[in-house]
Image 1 (tube, rainbow, N blue to C red):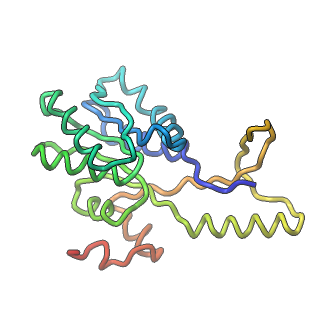
Image 2 (cartoon, helix red, strand yellow):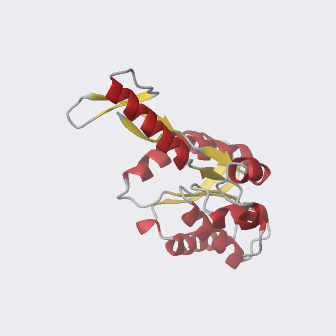
Image 3 (cartoon, rainbow, N blue to C red):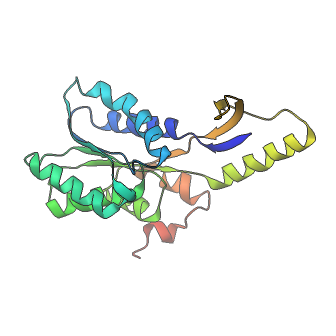
Amino acid sequence: MFIGYDTYKIGQNLGKHLSERVYKGNFIVLKGDKGDFNTHFLYDGANKYIEPMLGAGANVILNDYVPGWSAETAKEMVKKAVIANDMKLDAVLCPNDGLAGGAAAAVQELGLKNHVIIVGMDAELAAVKRLVAGTQDATVYMDLKNMASAAVDQAYALAKGEKVTANSEITNDKGEKIQVYLITGEMVTKENIDKVLIESGYYTKEQVYGNN
């Protein structure tokens, strides 16, 4: 039994959200570190929504890996791409909040006047504060308590010889089918921060809306 995050589905959710917020314009797609297997699942999922936009007025000015998931590298990549594109940028898709932070910093340093949609993942506190400030549009909350509870429940079922709760399956290196329980996380925007992150106890109201 395998329990984990459905990175492909999470990528889909990121791409879907971005495509719903910006239908056309100049896009940047940051793909994370090339050596991280999660990078490829996230990108493939997001690309399900990004690729169809290319024939409908969307222009991808940068679509590249970010070595070491470096926020600083992401910032410089975004700045370089935007400068080369006559300072035009409408949206940035990032597979984590660190890269989203780098993209947001690039937008600020370049002094872009239009609102740039930036999506990320992990619900880091700095990212949630950017949601409040309007410099990031969305992030994905990965509920570790949900995963921990699922792990305990499935382990108990296995120990008792009972049927496990699976919502998918994977194939291992030996070609064997393994049942899996995958968690997709929850999209967080400025509008549902209180409900998803504060009411759940993940962050306090002071942490999110305070000055520090």
